[in-house]
Structure formats: C-alpha cells, structure tokens
Image 1: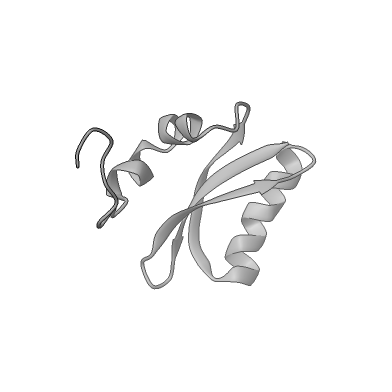
Image 2: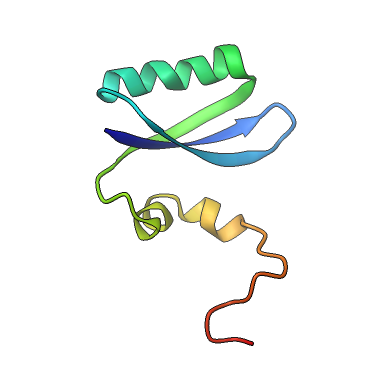
Length: 79
C-alpha cells in the first residue's frame, strides 16, 4: 500500500514523504519513527494513496501545493 504524510523539521522545513507500508498500522509506526529517529518535529496528515497520481497528492495536500516555490518552472499555457 502507498501512503503520504506531511512533516515539519526542527529547522522549520516542511515537506511531503511518500512511502510504502503493509497496512495503516505499519504506516503509523513509520510516522512515529520519523519523529524519534529522523529528526522530524511534527509528522501529520497520513493518507493512503489509492490513485497514485499527482492530482491525488494536490487534492490531499493542498497546503503543500500552495506553498511550493516554483522558481523558473514555466506554468502551463505561459511562455
């Protein structure tokens, strides 16, 4: 099964982690390990990904999509 989760590091960086786990219980254990062993300050908004598409990620994590810095990446329909 595929899952995604938002996180915040102790330095204030936010992001999204996409990972595989056997079931929801295993995914929750992985979330706890992110805090305990990998230095993430806050891990939240765990979702199972059923479609596995970028559109699904945008729908489930609109806050992350809205704060992404796109820099010089062209926007569709703009040259």
